[in-house]
Length: 82
Image 1 (cartoon, rainbow, N blue to C red):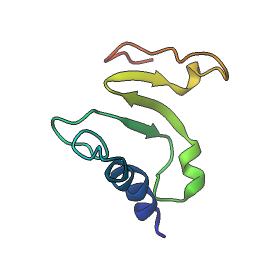
Image 2 (image 1 turned 90 degrees about the vertical axis):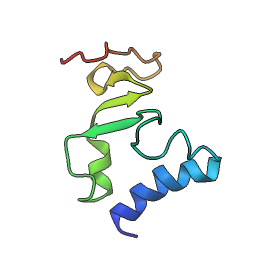
Image 3 (image 1 turned 135 degrees about the vertical axis):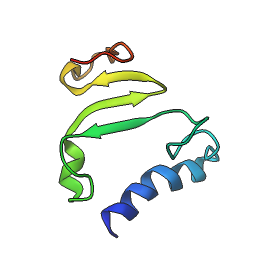
């Protein structure tokens, strides 16, 4: 599979499998804005998926540098730049 196929399977097709394609799985108006921002090009290969800098889940920002294994996530403020 190409990396684009892998990403599509993990996002769009995952949402379809869960029956949630109307609310998640793609970035479109009216859907929950769940997205990750990477330092590396996600199409470069699977190792690039380890370069997460920021995750946005339903509009809440979660910075990778704030992650502590075993601790509850500490959200950033919407629009906050750190």
